[in-house]
Amino acid sequence: MHKLFRTAALIAAASSFLPAQTTTTTAPTIAEIVAARVAHLTKLLTLTTAQATQATSYFTTEVTALTTLNTSLAAAKTALTTAVEADSTTGITAAATTIGTVTMQEAQAEGTAQAQFYAILTTTQQTIYQEVLASGLDADASDCVGGIGPGGGGGHR
Image (spheres, one colour):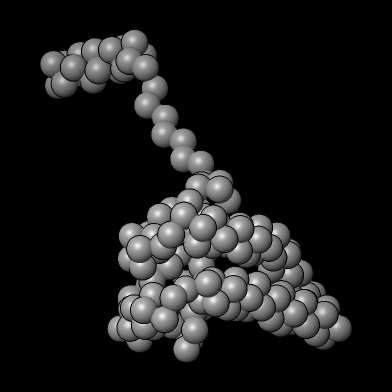
């Protein structure tokens, strides 16, 4: 018993000398999200430099909008919880309306970026893109924030 206590005390004393291991992760920036997405699409579809530049512009606009909308959606969900807990039908209606509006705006931002991107593709690239989307694979590699794609493919959330 005494040996066990001494071992525990030694471990406790030694641990005070060891540096603390802290891991902090930061969310990727909008530029990093877009760069990864465009790099994936460039590899998948052999985008030209001009296409990649245009895609970067379209997707930067989309991801910026989605970032703002995600903040609004989180606030609306908090408001909904508060309204439910307060048994406030007007609060529930207001929060639900906001959630619906923000969800529509997300779909609009995603759809707009996808339509703009699709329009700059060659016919061959469009065919490949459609095939990938139809297969259920994520052509955008947009796990963080992403598109809905033509034909309802692509995906996130």
